[in-house]
Image 1 (tube, one colour):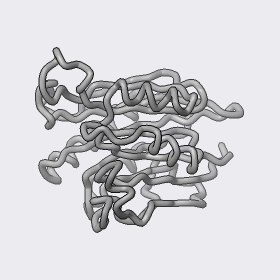
Image 2: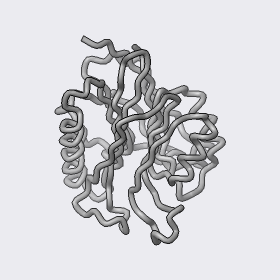
Image 3: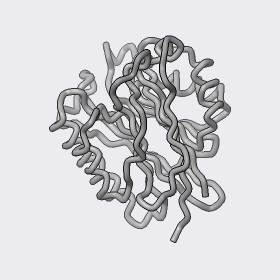
Length: 235
């Protein structure tokens, strides 16, 4: 069975055009969309534009909980229902008042009797040691939550891990591998790859697509989206 996974840090604090984002998502026709730096109302509105289902989790409050609508988080959107939604704090410092707080969001979707578990992550910007630690905590959580679940695993998101194989290797423990790809940041003239989609070890990857970037993309976010298409046949 063929699956298409799209990940994108949309920098929601800058209020990107959700209509344009929806257009770009439709062009890529993913089975699941993983968003980082997205507000709850943005995730909800985008899901309404697409006619999709969505789940969201809080990362942190940039200002105050009294301005709850400006809280940043992670979201998963899909044209089919999302089930068994779970979130997990990855950073050692877990206060919701600081942007250093890092989280993950996971959910399962089913299509034609095959189930895919997607874990959406946003790792630290404060150094490789923090990213490796958070990746290890994420992999441990995925492994514990997946025991006996019977779904194929996908891990994706903004890893902030430019040329850092050590953080990505932590996910080998849950049976996924990097698909490779082009630079994703900054979106006007990208030179570093921060955004990843990891798929099952024995999946056959047919598409890894990242736009070339430019002014049009910079108006939406400082990151470019990454689409991966792969085929996975159960044992």
